[in-house]
Image (cartoon, rainbow, N blue to C red; front, side, top):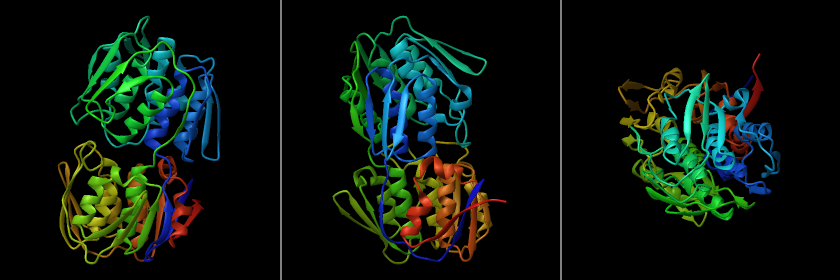
Length: 420
């Protein structure tokens, strides 16, 4: 098992190119199951989750090649059973359910795994697919769905903590080959949903309203192959932006989408961080003394839950008291106990973390619990005095393309090592 050794205290300087979005590419890969014709996906990030999804598509019968940031898929003949040993490795694999149901009118998919950050039930996925004609049961750890006929209908996807992104993706992919018109109300508005809709439209689907709470899908008889370039990863961009501010550096993010980062940039500005936008480039630097801010995670276009852990680190470095409130996932403060090992003063009160910032951090061994917690610990290690060892970095490799290489190019002293 690998870990990162980080010698802190070096400001980050330079340019970093933002990779394609993990949360966009996985459902787009799944959507290739909707056609027997070849599909090409460009600017695909080199991530373990992408590799896993490629293996899942292959296990279903598709021909898949991944090389140089380009994924080629042809699912000429596929089967409906998603292998447990592959699907269990990541929650995003549940997005094969919709396209299998749409193409074959039947699917058998293992309940998924992924990061341990609290319950993330798929009940809204199943409810939405049932509302367009699927008959669904859960047996022996598998979701079994059948639909001799898929028909358009009205689907409501509002949940306890807001719309479901993957649920919206699943229903969209199930509905594009259904008869009639499907209207999804309380649909997720994330840019990744729009990216999937753009790919499906390029395949011949008829979709309007993506990016709004109401998405309308008019079913078509068949889809064809298409080419698509994945949008930039807004979470990766936010992570490097916060790392630049935390280390008192100056970093230019190349090929990003600042318009997808409004909530994050707003909080960074409130904290005293300076940003300058030039097209798809965004320069981030510390503007002086940091100021404490309160943050509440919300569905898009609110502050992303996937940036909460990184922002918590920045507030731990900021003199004063900040309150970070998590409204999306119940158990997304597991990084707090590890940050305390580095010297951070953070107390958990219900859904909020009370951060008493400004105390210096010092290096220590820490254990990553999930993807974004891993990123937060890396940022803390970049700032801490001495050496920080971040263990279990396989979480990082799920969502950050070559993070150690990118950080080294920015001047960080980071080394990937094998744990004894």
